[in-house]
Amino acid sequence: MLLKNCPEDVCTYIKKNKETYVPVGPELVQTSTFCYDDYQNFMDQSKDENNNYIYTRGANPTTSYLEDMLSDLIGCQKCKVFSSGMGAIAATLLTLLKQGDHMIMLNTIYGEAYSFAKYINKFGIDLTKVYIEKPEEVVQYIQDNTKIIYLESPSHQKCQMLDLEGIVQIARAHGITTVMDATWASPLFMKPFTYGIDLVIHSMTKYIAGHSDSLGGVVCGDTDIIDTISEYGLRFLGSVSSPFNSWLTIRGLRTLPVRMSYLSNAIVQFIDAIRDDPRIAKIYHPYAATGYQQELSKKYLSGYGSLFSLELADEDFDKLTAFVDKLSHFSIGVSWGGFESLVLPSFKGDNQAKLDERGLRKSHMRMYIGLENTQTLIDDFIQALDSVY
Ligand SMILES: *Cc1c(COP(=O)(O)O)cnc(C)c1O
Image (cartoon, rainbow, N blue to C red):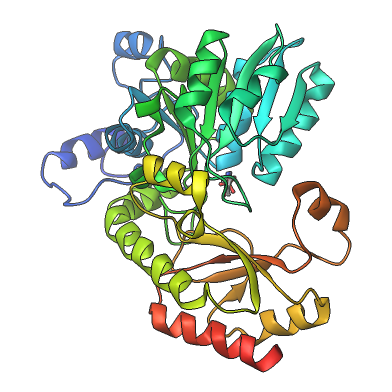
């Protein structure tokens, strides 16, 4: 049996009804394709599938609305949204690099992005991964074919800040594009474009969407370069955000400032409560930094992300396991940026070599402070410490 048609065809029905209501929130346009009743109009629009509404792999009104909100907040000409942070990273690197090119990655990078950079060596793209403290140290690694300097600041796991102005100055002098993953600080607490970074990437899965219910990524920069990344990296790899995930991300973005200001205070309160405990060997977070690192934090951050790492003084792995299991307000899990607080030890029993490469102790763990009552989280952390150490 065939389904009964609407009173008229759906396009006409939607068009007519649209004029009779105005929703208060952004509209979820959950469609793969867009219909036209005028062929000339269709032909005109389809000349630019990345900016007109032809097919959701090119553009979708819900996703466009999100992109406009993001460009405004981040302070750039254009943003392009992807189905995940890795989608944005892969599309950007594959678009900008070609066979025979060389890329430099600085300090501790998000693991999957680093693995991807190594993987594309099979296409003849070379990688140099280096740990630096001061920008001038990067000069010695620059080659004639260096096209990209890729960085995170603060860095993954170790929360090490970099002097963006210094890096940009060196990159520009050599005609190198700077690509920065700025997920940690969110678009609110760091403004990489102010210092001349060319492309900024966020995993929106974390703070921007902010509810651990949706994945997303975004790359931001000048219109020309973003259009090129859309034309090749986005359309060919097809890591397109579903309209529903874009809609969830808009919902998150609207409360981002309120959440971030709460979390920035929460992490300070949390670190203050535990930093002098002799059972803790080290805290990796810009607020806990000293000397040059502290200067960089003051210069580049206007607030704090609530993801940090710590190393316990006692490196016994059975104790660490017991400690993590004793925490009742921190779930064990990857990712971060949502409501729930999380904990993730770095040692998994068989990855000592990876830890050594990154200079991390066996007792290293990552913690994410979420939106729960901060004192409850502190009490929970202390009771778990007391019961094991
Ligand atoms: C999670 C994360 C990514 C990857 O983003 P997905 O949305 O998980 O693909 C990239 N960079 C950083 C810093 C991240 O935390």
